Image (cartoon, rainbow, N blue to C red):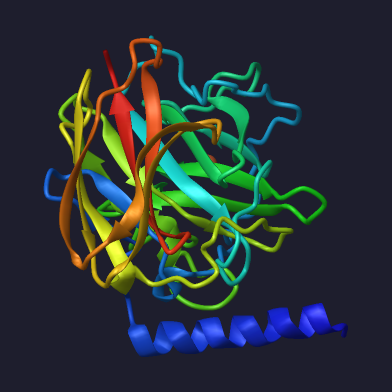
Amino acid sequence: MDTKQKARRQFLKNISLASLSFGLIPAVVKGSDGIMSGETTAENCFVSTQDYYGEGPFYTPNPPFLADGMLAGSNEPGTRLIITGQVRNLDCSEVIPETRIDLWQADDAGAYDNNGFNLRGYVLSNSQGFYMFETVLPGHYPNGGSYRPSHIHVKITPPGFETLTTQLYFEGDEYIPTDPAASITSGPYDATHRIIPLTMNNLGQYEGTWDIVVDGDGVSTGMNDLHTEKGMIYSAGPNPFTDKLEINYGVFRDAKVGLFVYDIHGRLVANLEEKFLASEKYLAEWKPDSGIDKGYYFIALKINDLQVHYLKVLKVG
Ligand SMILES: [Fe+2]
């Protein structure tokens, strides 16, 4: 075993100890206006697990690349669902850009397209490790004497590393407790951290955050010392917004503070704040230039150059 492998093994041990001592800490916090935010604390650094059912019978190779993240076309029946997150390495100290995330799922009625590529495709994590896709909530379909809970199949491939084949589930689904895969709460197929909460935004779309933690070559975004006790973004609203976004955030100790906006490709779009600030609550405003496209953006808070928190927002006008 080389040093790197040893370090990984030791890390996995630490992870399981950390899970024991912290118990079930939600991987997301709810902002005051109901939007979900991903936290980057060590307590929620859970290594992503494979699903008990593996690939299942309905994978079709060579799905299309979804440059805009639209897994479901705008005419697809069902309730819209937007999933975002960040791909991180095993100790969550770095993010993994260019990770291929293959997605396939049943439609609103519980049926797979096994002839074509409807509700099939892949996205890539961007330079900040962020990924997003928009789809519809998958329907239930029969399995044995019951139904499978709503789920999205995922294959995650960091550049040069092995593929993790798994499934994503949604909190509150009535079929989770009886599902042979989704109900597993320990061991290599533990689904606990692949069951994510969804909230509904004011456009009637479900939103959820799923941070993926896999073995891969990460790049530093200054997250190697994760402490939400340094500061966090409380809210960013209204969300969705058109011409003005207000961001409430807190700095918990005097520090150099940066508040940045990235687009879904990881490009820096705006630098809202970058200066030394005293421990206090702050309000920032983003009024995007007229040339800024509609779509998803990530607001990132950095304290002493460490990214401690981020929020996703949607520009609709
Ligand atoms: Fe399935």
